[in-house]
Length: 408
Image (tube, one colour):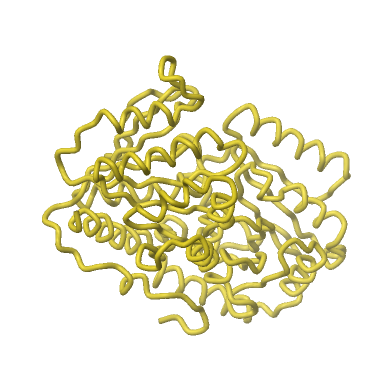
C-alpha cells in the first residue's frame, strides 16, 4: 500500500464473482465520443477493456454533429439518439427511454447509468429518473455512476423522486468520500454504495524521456488541460496568472491552457477566454484549442506543473493523467482531490475558491528544491500504478457488473 494516502481498498468492497460468463453492459450517458471529458474518457477506456474481457458493451447517448447514428468504436457499439418527434419528450433521453422500454434483454444485462442533474440537464434528469424506474419495473440490474460532487444533494432538493429511484437501484458508484456522504445523507443504504476510482492508462500517459528539458530557461511550464465548462474556472486561472503570481515576475515561466471546443457554445466560451487574455495584456500565456485526446499526453510531457482551480469534480481524469505523466500538481483541497493528493507529500493543495491561497501554492512549487519535487512525482507515479491503473479498474468493474447480474 502507498503510505500517506487514505482510501478504501476497492477490491475488498466488491462481492465475489458468481455469475457464469460476462454480463452485457449498456451504458447511458448524455455525451460520448467525439465529445471528450472526464466521463467520456472513463467510459471509453473502461468499455474497450471490458470488451477484451468478454463483455458486450453498448453506449446509448445523444446525437452529435457529424457523427453517425450507429457505429462500433474499438468493440463498443455506439447508438446516438435524436430528440423524439412523436413521443412528446423534450430531450434525446426520451428516445433512449423508449429504446430501453422496447428492448428484450435475453442475456444477463446491466445498465450503467451516468446521473445528470442541473438546470441545463433538466430534461435529461427527468428522463434518467424514469429510466431508473423502468429498470426496476423490468428487473434490469442497474449501476448508477455519480460523476461529480454536489449532484446528489441537488437531486435531493429538486427531484425527490430521483432519490427514491437511487434507493432502489442495485449499486451506486461514488468517486470520492464527499459523494458517499451525500448519498448516506439522502437515505441511500451504505450497502448499495461502492467506491470505485477512475483509472488511467499509464502506458500512454507516462513521463517524458530522460532527455526532456523544460521549454523555459529559468522557469516552469504550467499546464491546465480542461473542458470548456464554467466549473473549470479557466477565467479565474488567467486572473491568478496575471494578478497574483508575483513569484513568477523574474522567471520565464509560461501557462498553457489546452481545451477542445466541441460545439457552438464551447467555441463562444473559447473566444471569450482568448479575448479575456488579450484585454488583460497577459504575457507568457498560450491558449491551445483542438488537441485530440489521443495526443494530449504530449502536452503533459512538455510541461512541468499541472494546475487546476476546479472545485466541482468527482475524480478528475486530467489530474490522474498529469500524475501519471510525472507532473508536479497544484490543486484545490476538495473531496475529489484529497484522495489523490496529500499536501507537501505528492503535490501542493490550496483553499478552494481562494486565488490568494492558490498563489501561495504556486510560490511553494517555485521555491521547492528539485530533489523534493522529484520525490513527490515518484510518489504520484507509484500511487497511480498501484490504485488507478486502467486495467485494474476495468477488472473491478467487470466483477461488479457480473455480480449485480448474478444477484438477480
